[in-house]
Length: 195
Image (cartoon, rainbow, N blue to C red; front, side, top):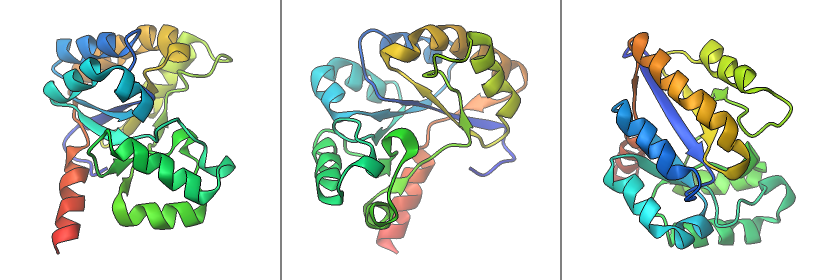
């Protein structure tokens, strides 16, 4: 993302879930921070109130497929259908492939309809082989102005996220960063469509 404004773009993949997403939203609210949530369609269906809260509190949303499919392991047509099903629940031009894995043909087709959003800082909050401190260091040592940081609001990331997120928000604030959502990418895509 463009730099020069001391902005960090936090993102959360896989939710919403009641065990973690409301806590994430509380943390963001406490620091007046905005973020982007790449939601799994079946979780949106099952936890509509949490999804509505994400929208109500000014965060941006993106499609993360209906069932968290790995593009490398899924034939193209079923993959597109799965994303389309998620799009019936989530109205967003942003898409992040689960696991960050897309085949070239999938990327080519999807980029006609979506802004594909990856990241430059992977927290590793899902990785059982790293400690909470390593996860935190991973973020703080690699986060720079304009970074897109990926966390996960899923069960396996819960312990690390509880340790890391408040510290990232506190440190970022202390260093003069502000945390924004990716709505600027939505605007950019809308401009491209009307041009």
